[in-house]
Image 1: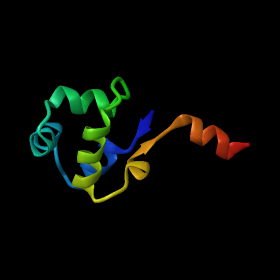
Image 2: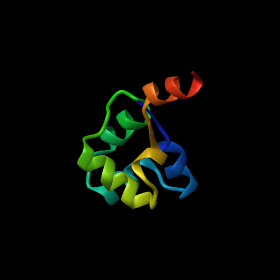
Image 3: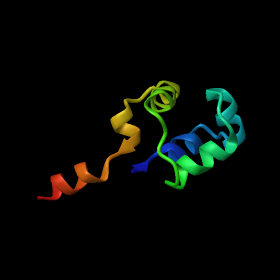
Length: 71
């Protein structure tokens, strides 16, 4: 699953450590989410979307959805 977490975090001029503290996870979790190595739980996805004031769908892009839009 692709996401815009890194892009949104950088727009706020935050480093991974500060963002991780803000949503109460480790910096490694943020790094793994940003690189696509880890898909967050629904609870964590909501925490991230709440932090940025955006919907989950605006931040996390399901690749199957993108394929369907191309058809």
